[in-house]
Length: 122
Image (cartoon, rainbow, N blue to C red; front, side, top):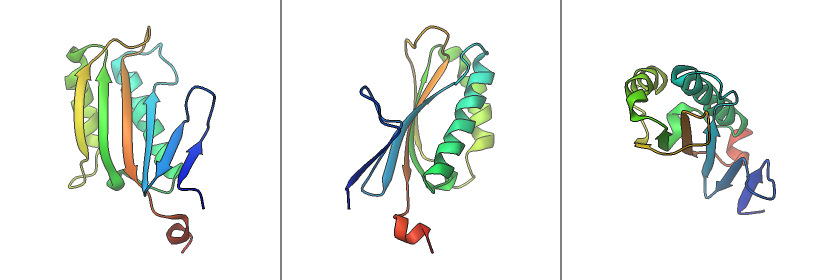
């Protein structure tokens, strides 16, 4: 059994890395042409899709590090975040302003607990 699993690996990065019961990955909007609300919505949906792919869910989020191109978008983020995170199961979270690639408004680094394959199969 491999102790590190990489999904969607390329020469530069992996889409998801799973080790010691935790999955780590990064999400940016698939379509960077939208405003902050559009991009945040995309990223949250993409996190949901990855959680499903790895056999996890929002209640198993451990940490999310959020990079915003403009901290002025934080109120939009917070409103959307508060409606997305399950009550009583909020992960630790940090939000910082950062220079992102052209057109991108948000990037999120995610850490979530996953169940071992043998437990997911039962």
